[in-house]
Image 1 (cartoon, rainbow, N blue to C red):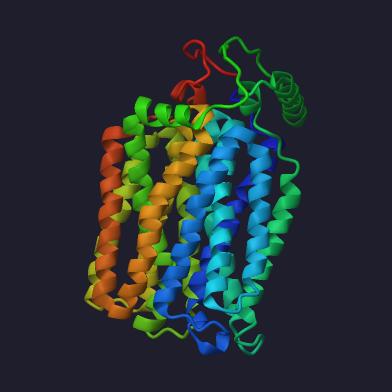
Image 2: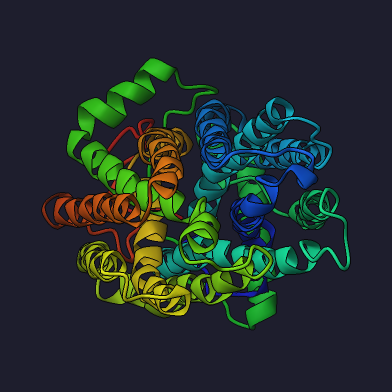
Length: 469
């Protein structure tokens, strides 16, 4: 798979699997954009700013639990089965959210929506890395994770229209936002039916005949699409096939054999999760409550921020494959942290209005977005294939649980306390990002353009890896 030239088949993988991040961006942005509306009694919910933060925390908690449950099942049952199940769960839960009639029901729906999205992270990232050639893995992974922000921009624009009471009643527009997200998810489901199972997973789990047939079919299709003949394969790896791998074995390998990599994964996830979830779940409240931006205009400010976030991974992504993982990841984390400190100082001095605060956020998150995307890339590369989905799930769950649940809860209260408290929250986020960058300098693994089996030999390998198909 690593020797295949880029072809139309790879674009099908990118579209079928990568679009889930657009859904996540849409979900998070809709909540951020409509948060002011949900605090109004006319919305039918009448949440407080603290309850908005709680709703965000509940969503993240669902994502953490979902990632662990579905991540384990992804390694056990296969990539394809789980990325279909998790998308269906998301669809059902987000449609149910549109019919929320009280805060408790709303929180429950947000929990299961998050569970579906969290499960997607484990299933999708593991499948992408196992299907995309090594020389393109960095830029593709970053671009796909960065596509979250296309959903964010779409959600912001959509919210402006749906929150306009000239078009929709106050208790109707925000409900339609969740319904439209489900429609997009249904389109993704139709495309995803054509994405195959990972042949790496199939081979290790004793389905070598199916894996060989699948790879041969892909090779013929790529040769047909590119007009190029593939070079013969000389390297090999011997595998002891098994139908399942115990959870105890997964934990022993991940934390006993690779403790430094575990510290690295946690550091990267905690830093980016606190920063992003803290800022973006409550950004509309900062604009409306502290900077006097009208509630129906607040979503417009997210559009340039979202585009800056998308531009970062896309424009910097190739450097992660050429310059290398360690300098780029460390640079993006530390650079964004320093820029956020400067933004916090200006915000505290009250020299930033809504427009200039947005400009500062654009610059900060141009670099932070590339760093955050690289966190998913890192943990999906540096652990053995049998543990890949579970490793993604664990580091996402723990890192996001610590940073993503605490962040929104803190910021929901900070907004109620004023500019000084919010600034303190920015400093916390900056410190965590800088610390993660320092950890990357000392513990980072250089995985650029290397086969996954060369970065971490499969648990089932009978001898050291010398190559892979």
